[in-house]
Amino acid sequence: MFLACGYTDMRKQIDGLAQLVDQSFKLNPFDNTFFLFCGRRCDRIKALYWDGDGFVLMYKRLDGKSSYQWPRSAEAVRELTPQQYRWLMEGLTIDQKKVIAKRSAGRII
Image (cartoon, rainbow, N blue to C red; front, top):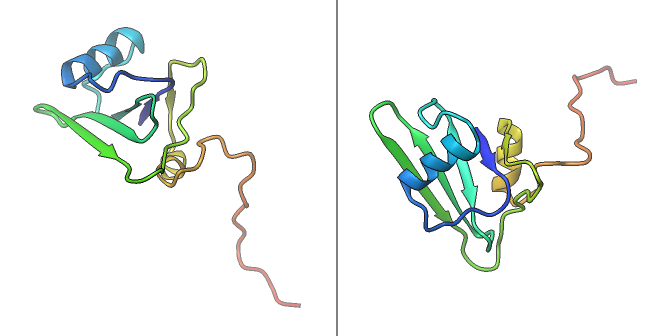
């Protein structure tokens, strides 16, 4: 899964987003992966995915005053882990400073 950092013109549809992935990010839009995009308002995202015989374009708009913590770094594109994707969808930043480490069960003293 890849995330387009910065602002994306949300008027772009399948062809425009696929062209952005190919020409600007130098990635293959026909790979079996999701590409995520966000506009200036940070309350809407688009996901582009090639499913083998055509592109799937998904669009999500948050209700109310909610917004995504979308990275605006100088990097053009970032690869996301499944955990980073969950953080993003929960309204958190993908660059968590500290995460509580999981521990295995121990002995009770």
